[in-house]
Length: 82
Image 1 (tube, one colour):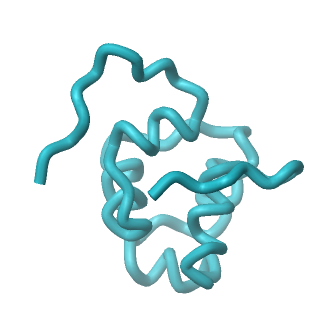
Image 2 (image 1 turned 90 degrees about the vertical axis):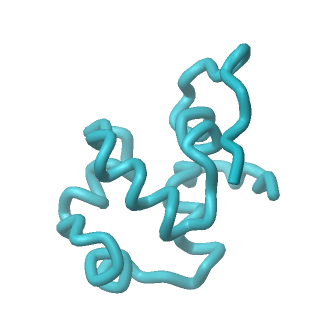
């Protein structure tokens, strides 16, 4: 399900908030420190592949959706199959 962008909010933060998750809850689910998550959500830092996979799993998104949300061109990349 594609989210409608909210002005002023990063897509990764929007994914988290749509699920009504706090940063401490995401830390518990993924092991990603709250400060690190804040940097990722603000665009100050790019997540490692491991963090991106953990966030995708937590948010119920495909890796392609996560890359696209971060502004990475995903054209030509097949969709994840389940």
